[in-house]
Image 1 (cartoon, each protein chain N blue to C red):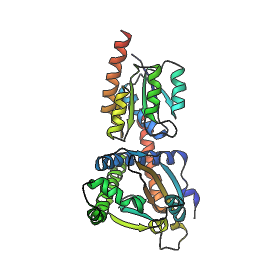
Image 2: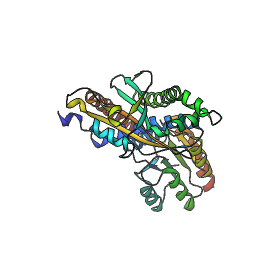
Image 3: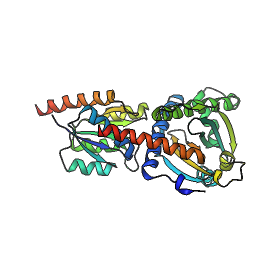
Image 4: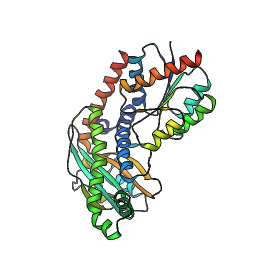
Length: 213
Length: 127
């Protein structure tokens, strides 16, 4: 693989992190409305890593059983957006959304549907903000719920070494008072990294031109 | 009147966007940039900052903690917290600190509205 084409310069990395930060912050605002509690966010991290390394990052060493709501996006660049949390937090998240008056059976019954809908609102909010900021339309798939470890979430069936490297962008979120922690993550493969670099470069150039008057 | 505006954001892109909008709205304003809350406090201590625009989500001290520190020495300085995180808690904490809240993605209209309010406040304070 050609690392020169995929490496991100400091300014590109900064720009991608900031654009994602705006997207995720807007998404956290929607999540806050749904759960009725403040959602705390970390600062965003942007890395080009192997799929295995991305998987280990979300497992955090001790919690390999994860639930994710994922949506694919396509446009000038394509990839997947995921809302990820430990499986043990899944029911608590659903309960915080549907309200405490529901029985455990109801919550279990609603789990899959509630997770998909929550993911849909959060991930769409995040991706739409990114698409609007970059002024590039993106198509989003319907959400699906995936369970498994980090590799199940990020794995690729391809043996190709290049397809194993991904742009991994993630922000931790914590719901205060509820002991719910998770990640909002974006994953893009190699051709998309190059397309995104070009678009971000144009975006930065446009701001520089505006600033120069 | 020419004001000195401090932009505090860990993202260079975000500082560029804010600086670009400021130059369109107030071409004669003087800009100072800080990449962290600590840098911002140093710039303010060095004097002559009139207005501050502060990002919320920064490594280390966040924007609201920074505004709380600014308020100790500068209770009347016009300050805006600039963030895409529109959660009630954050907006209300900004209000408690007597700071405005300006949403990201930043628009010229929102920034202009904050700046005209800030100019009035500074004029009153000087008058």
